[in-house]
Image 1 (cartoon, rainbow, N blue to C red):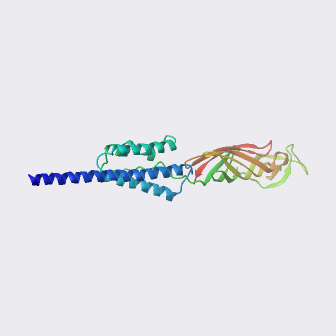
Image 2 (image 1 turned 90 degrees about the vertical axis):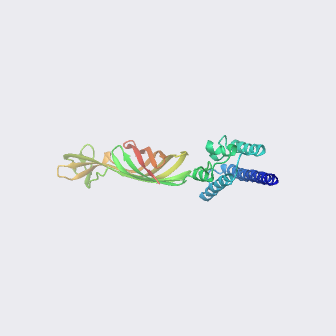
Image 3 (image 1 turned 120 degrees about the horizontal axis):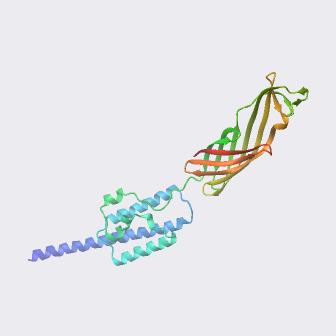
Length: 286
C-alpha cells in the first residue's frame, strides 16, 4: 500500500511540474509576442522596412511558435487576459488589423492548446509586413503615334520624381534635292509633280515624370521635331514642301500607369497647329 501511495505522489508531482513548465512556456511566448507587437507598432509609421529587419521579425515570429510547441493544455485565466490585452492594443494601433495576421487555426493555439511542433513549423504564416516594393524602376515602352510613327521610351521613376527619353519616327525619310511651295512654285520656276508624296516624321524628347498616386505618373517634356512633306518630281527627285513642313521644338505630355510588370500610358505631342499627335505607350517595368 505504501508503495502504491508513493508512486501516486511521484506521478502527481510530475504532473504538477509538467503543468508549471507548460504555463512557463505560455508566459515566455506571451513575453515574445508582446515585444514583437510593440516593434510592429513602432515600425508602422516608417512606411517601408529593409530586408534584414523583415527577416528578423519573421525569425521572432517562428520562435514564438517553437516556444508554444513546448506548452501543454490551455492558458490560465491570467495568461488569457494578458494575451487579449496585447492583442487589442495591437489591433487599435493597426487600425483594426489582426495581430500577426494569423489564420484562425493559429489563433486557437492560445485558446485550445498546441498541436505538434512539426505541424507548427511546416505551416507558412508571417507577420503582416509587406516586403517593401522596389522604389525605383526603369520602364522600357513601345511608343506609337497615330500619324503613324513608331519608337521607344525609356522611363526612370522614383517615389516622387523621375525622367524619360523618347524617340519616334515613321521611317519614311527622303533625300531632298530642293525646296518648293504647296502652290507648286520653286525658286527657279514651277514644280512638275511625279505623283508621289511622303511625310517624313522624326522626334526626340527628354522630360520628367511625377508621381501622382500609387503607380500613376504624369510626364512632360520637350525636344526636337521634324515633320517634312516631300514631293517627287517628274525627274525622280524629291522636293521639300517648305510651307507644309515644320522643324523645331515641340511639347510632350501624358500619363503612365504601372500594374506589376506592365506599364501603359497615353499622351500628346504638340508641335504647333500643324502637328498634334496622340501617342500610346505600352511596355515592361523592371
